[in-house]
Image (cartoon, helix red, strand yellow):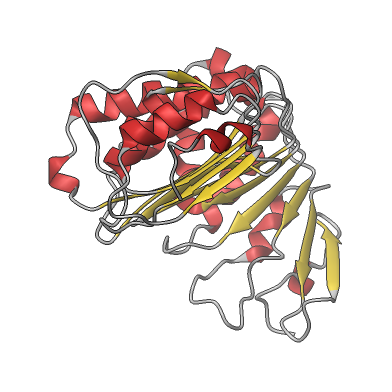
Length: 298
């Protein structure tokens, strides 16, 4: 496709795949002429077949853009996003990777937070989130508003631990104040607990009613989860439903002593039987039958 052709200014949707000769400067210049563009997908992949960062790029405004999907290496994605001024409420779905961890400097991290925060502030100033997903493991980080905003960073080796609180820090408390359902891995939960133990005025996700646990590489996490559920009650922010539908104890290598949840009376636990994903079960903690919870012998 010749991005410099005059007819491209009439597009309302554009998807670009890997192109070895594409330059960011040409891409940005083309986007600046697309006054009607609503959806832009830049799927360059994580190799080096797509564009490279350039010096002296121009800043562009895409006034009708409502959806921006970017999949490319870390440095390219930051260079691109830094030079796009999003339309009010524009959603971002960013998937990027770190190919050389040692080359990432503190300046790069500060720039990444500033650039991503530009999009989070723009998105959440015009939309409210009710469901959120926080995933953090050794080689990936994902922060996602289920309705349309997502930032995912992965690496073939190890993602720096400092990236998760940095990325989470791009979200203002007001952005997540209305979240009712939170999907969370254990490693991500640890960072949320640290925030709870910090500044009492900035406790995250005050309205959560359902906590869905996503197993990760963390070892036995039962005490951690039980203590978190108990602390939410003490703070006057009780979680009503603990969702274990993404954990299958028969097939999972991650253990959990679910009988300890009996210590949180009134908490509803929901899960699916290993035998069939459509079989949804529930138990109200404190009912005196913790052995029915998943992971316990019949």
